[in-house]
Image (cartoon, rainbow, N blue to C red; front, side, top):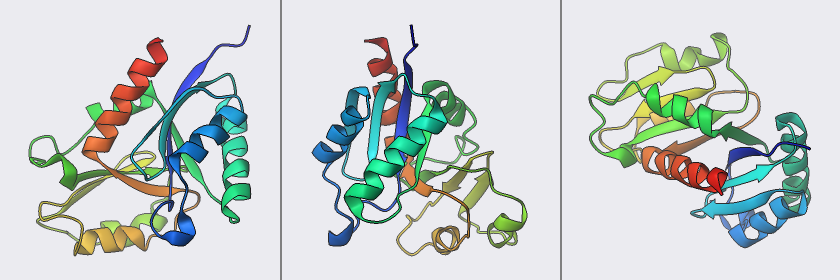
Length: 185
């Protein structure tokens, strides 16, 4: 008997313009089509939680293939388990200053970055903004929002392998809650 694994899915660059439209109903159907169960999506930016008997490598490959076929271009994804999301939440370095959850962000990476890839981010102080690098996450605090943030701009210019996609703290907490509930069914 194959055991079910539960994941949160993070997709970069969907629903940010008319050429990048991915209706969440279509995403749910694609995930069900590759054997995922209990599929739920959250907001319109490529977030989902689900169970699957597939291992992470096979799952990533299957999701990226159906998304690429649908979107007509390569789409990279990042996956996290409930245990990984819990660790990300517990390791939040900004709990003492992040007073507005929508201004606290986690950038999810599909591959761990090298020091040299992060030079542009770590070469200066971003005060009052803050940045901390995790293993496959980058935590950022934007006390004045991301809209005109020099730190957000520098993060967007990093040349990293695979997916690099950012979610605010409210989304991280909601996906963790959804994943915990879905995995208990």
